[in-house]
Image (cartoon, rainbow, N blue to C red; front, side, top):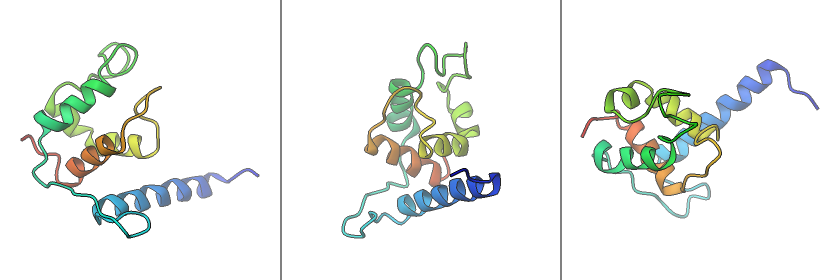
Length: 116
């Protein structure tokens, strides 16, 4: 069964909204447990190390293939796209990222992608 382009867009949008709701409400899918989202999550102490371990490598975000994600301004400017790419599974390329690392990035983006 093939989906029309409108249905594909709706499907992707629905997944994005559901994922955003899941991480912003701090509730799990079944509502029985919660995650903690620290609004003061640190770019330098938490987010940059995650990106360095999962994204800033040869063949990915290495300034040869795609813009490096090594500095705050670049990551800040692309924060929404980075989050969306992680939610859809497009990132990290050919790797898996832990749920905790994904949640940290979602939390950081949702709280304004601050340089702290």
